[in-house]
Length: 463
Ligand code: ATP
Image (cartoon, rainbow, N blue to C red; front, top):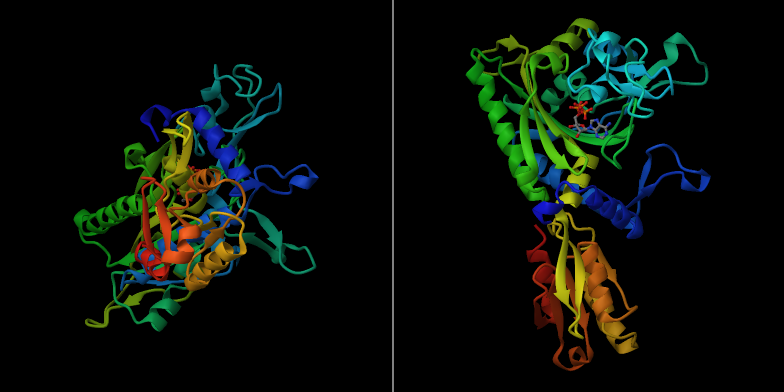
């Protein structure tokens, strides 16, 4: 994408339109008028999302000897959230405009203006973002953003449970069990990805702020540090890992800013937080977070559960509570940053010599929904048969598209727009020379290779 477009709201509209028209992402519950800020992932969206999650898993779980995975229950008991501090402290501060009753988070009206100390006096002179009335807000009230529900048929105080607002907590509550079965030594990490739920006061900006979203989180346990350097070394390691990940997944690094979060604005458990921010068309905002959670969580769960959550050093026999570095990545914000980074418009000449705009999603092959499109030049049984045999040679190894409609030029454009790295065209010569044309999405260069080599050609480029 050209730099000129980076901050343009027009780009956001184009992404939303493309996502909808091509079956990536569309509004949920739409036949009933929609449900506020809920989004469903269509055939291409589900592939993109799954590929991003798989890439994260391969990179950080399969790719490292010091990290193992977990898939815990989304509903967790009230005592978990009492211990973690989320029941008391997982609040947004809410104000309501007295004139039009629109509701806002105080930090939406004034950046950094949040927390328990917020008073309506600080909002004097601030205009309501809905009706423009100045300084007419109710007193700020904390609003717990966890989704509450009941377990079982009877609603009572004892049946109250919460949907997790972050994937992190189970990695602390299950810590000793995972240590026991995985037999790892510190430093050592647990990775989990999955849904998290937050009853956000205001949602919006497409898939940026959702009430139901997915996280990919790692809790990386280290020995209790003696000096600041002892934990900073791991913190810096994870900052580097996040930078490498951004590159791997195709986020434009020129639009990334690492922002040190000041003490007053950090989460209750954090000693240091760096927000990895991205320049979205609607402003520079958080993409990921990296936090040093100290030993806050393990200690809190040990205290509340009465269970020993300490680590026993196999060499010295000493017991201690590990400290934690946490890289926390949102799946949907990754998708948005990836789409915004990948979207490209190029001026090209058609076969007839007229100028036209070519829209290309320059997605890395590892996350592209389809790795290749198989395109018989014409809807003729002998060409379709060859195309089918190529598809069969790929088996269930990768997602591919098979398209016999429209002109070949139109089919190429369609695949460019959804980010398919390779188009495999079967033409009449293929019947004689047993070769096909492979077209590269980004360079548009075409080469001819043997049909029997297609599968290997694509496999080699998969990662
Ligand atoms: P924000 O300041 O934008 O509300 P946060 O600081 O509350 O975000 P964290 O608690 O650090 O976010 O969550 C870790 C990651 O989870 C975020 O960096 C983001 O990628 C993702 N995330 C958090 N809240 C949402 C949400 N409401 N919708 C989509 N993704 C989210």
